Image (cartoon, rainbow, N blue to C red):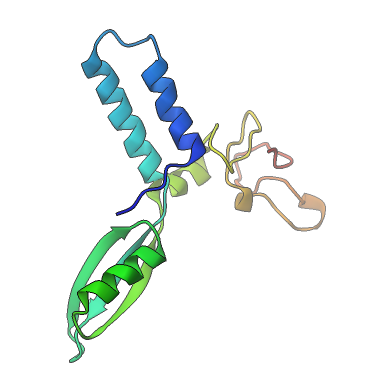
Length: 142
């Protein structure tokens, strides 16, 4: 699995590493591990789903960071049969879409919102308003 660190992910980990709030290396290491796990939970992944030539279920592999990585793996392994790629939606993004994820790039910066751009309406009079029923946000803020 190849990971390309994103700017906001690097900034989140850097903030922990530079923080004076930790009294030991163990505390800092635990905080960094938790932060990286949360960061990875916010990413979508790809799985390679394999079927043998006779139609029986085959081998499944995941996670891959993107479709090109999964395709490259499939080409190198050449098991026979057929394979297809399946996008694995991020559980972190799904939770963030309903609960809000303030401070993450791409999410609304309204103080009471924090939802993803696609939860904001693009239609007529409600244009820009968040469509999560409990959210008071009237327009998406970058």
